[in-house]
Image 1 (cartoon, rainbow, N blue to C red):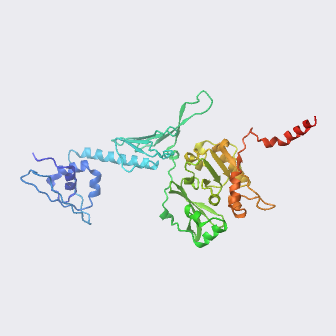
Image 2: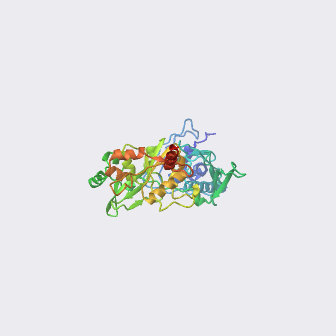
Length: 441
């Protein structure tokens, strides 16, 4: 009997409009093996040149394909006794497509899916940690009835499952570190699927239409003692926004654009919506042992003029006052940027809080210290600007006193006050009085 044609031959024969009615068996086999490929190839005209001899194939089939521009009519498939199995396969493919769409909605994206096998990718929750480990394992069943995933990083444990026509169940494993009887035991908290994972928008620099700074804005920064070299290194740009030219501060992680914040000269701020909140200048503190945190992007640029590149700025400014209760990680939306950058901040043994001197700046320093740990935080004291006023932030020190004075401010930072822990000089007057009294005896 003649050798069995290859699957490629079946595909090309099935897509050809010149297939005879007697070749419906080959057509059916090709559609069974390559239903998705046939759908894509159905709009093209394919001509096959065969070389047969006496009904047998002494050598491999020679195929020449010509793809035309005009689509040809798709051959009508005659119904046969195998139509039921074809319908089942199409239904299975539809279910798999629904599962892939649900996984992508949760941030799970894989370039080439392997159905019925375990796929490894980056976890959208923990981002693979500092080493960007592909710790998320994803499995889709061959019949498309279920998909499940698990992150195997110890401090993440994000997992869940999805059905093509039902709701998704998402879990987050946590460790109870309390002092009760359940201390050390792992507990599982279930979240609703639409609140479990925030899928952030991916930005493209071309879509934002960012431009190099014009001469007027370069002059504006020079008046604030910020050099063009510092502006270029930090990718400070401009954009036309509502018939105005605004300053664009680009937020990046590993040189990839994550967010963008716009500032008018009048200090009116706007940000790109639905983007991940991170610290401004995040790449500059990678593996840094000492980190400086300021309240604004211009303050971060000012620190660089004083010789400190290991500086980042918060993205959202300061709160009006200190909150009464510290929320847990999952509900700490105001300071989500700290949790998103936790891998960068964990490596720092000393964090200098250089927020503004006004009450909101003081409240921001307290909120940061509560989350980062008072024991490794230090606080700066801003110097006098003149006889009656103090400098408010890093940029004012740079403008009025110069980079050397700003460097002295950082070098003179003191350990953040810890409740119950006092400095020796707090008791100096009492000690001096005691010494003076006893010296006369």
